[in-house]
Image (cartoon, rainbow, N blue to C red):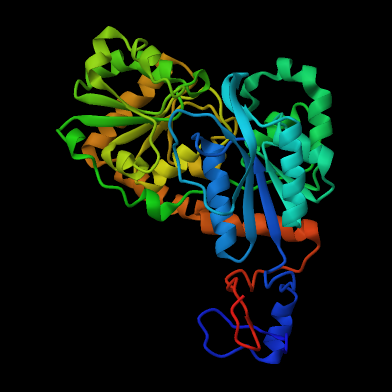
Length: 432
């Protein structure tokens, strides 16, 4: 059988001419009819738990796969009472059981041990990845095992704000230096993420922001049970100290004195056991005006559509995917200045910021913002936010990440080929 490969342009019935085929031939691999760029996205934080890294990795994998990259997720499987997020597709590879833990002000996971190491080794040998992209490069677990077992080219993405615990983390500076030295390139989701690790380690990096599915987040429908004339403020995120739920709870009684029709919708949990501890934190005078929705995922667009305003009362962070989602949903946002570079980052331009991270300052920011939203829906802020967020759609972000892959691997740019279909056809007409 003639094994020459016939290349087809997207949507075309006729094969490319020889000159066009020569261009695309550089991206074809005889290992089974796949384009040669095969990438592992390795992370400790992935579904069935919820969070920003989980969102980032999932959408990055989907976006890369759409443009022909054979991207797969390597992760563990923590024990949870309830699965949140999408079910695994065949491109999610679980290499062992993980353990969830809380440390240094946030929650993470660790997948570690001899059996995990063996499974990871077998996975890497079987899949023959060209590159591994590590999300959370200093997480103790899969990243450490990868550095010990593999000499594949690696890229790291920094997500963590390090929670301003530099004194504690300095005790582990040697570990951070060792882990960060394992990569050929480093990406940070924001200047704040780069600065956080930069306090401990010297490294070169570039900023490629988080992304958002603009179409999905703008397609929600309001939940009718909460469209009763009250003004709904949405606070979404894990209920942990760094996200500042206590600041918002304590601000609510003062806000109600000026705007008695306000209702706070709280979406997120601290842990699967629920939110009882946080319900008790709400001042007695405001408890009738607070609704705990629990953790949300599939219903998130509808939750945003139900809100009249979103609040981010956090103490620490590096970027805020929640902010992007709120902008995409067309909602005005009030936030504390928890990201060091928030006054410079483009997606913060329309956000009403409090003067500092305190209950009193949050009240001073929210009271006039609520009045503005009641008056005209903060229409100008919403319009500008919708324009700004287009630059953060995953279709744009994935292209930037792909450019880093190509540079590390020394491959020519596929800018003209990213929409090329992943399937090819042999001369005999067999689809591979």
